[in-house]
Image 1: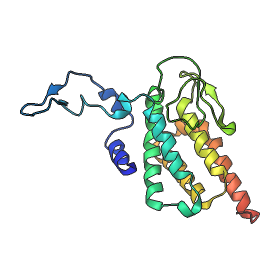
Image 2: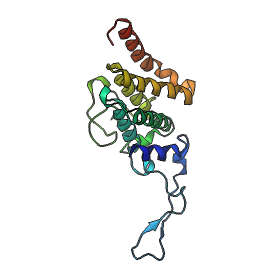
Image 3: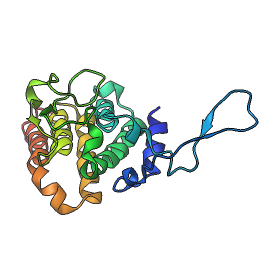
Image 4: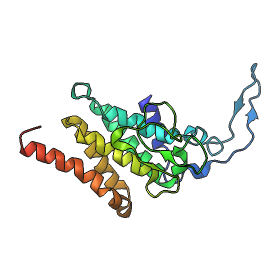
Amino acid sequence: SSRIIGTHVSSMDPTSFANLAVHTPSKKKKNSRKSSTVGLTSVNNPSFIIHVQGSLYQLARNFCFQINIVEHQYNESVCALAIKTITWVIRAMQHFPHLCFEEDDNDAVNFGDNNSEQGLRKNGSADDDDNDKCSKKTEGGPVLWLMKRLSNIAKNKGEKRRESVFKCFASFCTVCEGQFMIPHLKLMIEPLHRATREIENGDQ
């Protein structure tokens, strides 16, 4: 499923894919015993990310889980795909943050990494280390949540886990604009500093 999703998102430009969401009536498929519908073009059949509210958040959350694993469960190909997909997701979050929300309102929402299978809802539970609430208009929004999530993952010991997060950060710096990354430098530097200090102290 991760490969299918990875292939799906990689076929779209994260900076413009949501602009293709044009809703038109579907056509009935002719010469078929059962009634079914087919779309006219890929433009008229936008991604599930557009149709399913909160799915962009779910993608980020689930691929973060694939990185946040114990050492003996590490799989290089799975983590490489997760890094690539998270890089796509953060760019999509930057341009279309509303796709992270399950409810279309302007109330405060919780950006903590809760354990529910729902999108970003009001009054959701959160981890103690990531209990930030803000509105959809708050600068940073879902992007800030994702950066905090990755930063917290890398704070825990685990060479492979940390390496995957640092590769995410490197990938972000490669494809995202510098001005976009500057506000998040502290979140990237903190786990790097901790890892370096632990190595120097022989505590890795």
